[in-house]
Image: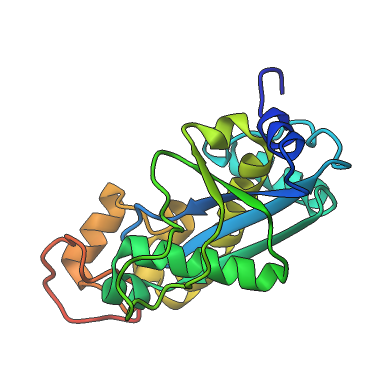
Length: 222
């Protein structure tokens, strides 16, 4: 789309010596239930312009995201996704969970991108100082960029593949826990989801360390 993400940032990094650049983005950080998912897309100098219609996943409809997937599967040098569960979010905190998911995406990728672009102001992929952290210990070379998911094609592509994958996971989980309406809300705190939590209480996929509504009943699988 006009004014959409480009490869200008990635090209500048490659002009400074990087042979490959990876865009990384997370989905599901603010949800009340379900995992977080991190997408990763690697580009190189030979990578062509991004597929038409690519944008930050939040700016696209579900149908638009789904239509992009076949083209994104053939675009760029490589792509991967990584997950961290609701249990891991509760156990380690959301930032550690994002780091875990990002490390798993990199493990799935099977290569070491020379530079990783993250959306925002904070490098949540950076190894923590705590030696007992469950996070990966590799020191990745990371560049943070505000609105990278709207400006950088690799990050936008990562956001789309992560969003489609997580939406599919939440629709599968909705079949196990239909009371919460996850096919519609994907685990986010919509009024209907909050009402269901008040009525039924949390299930195994809810993030219990978060400020969930006070429940009336114990765990359900209904």
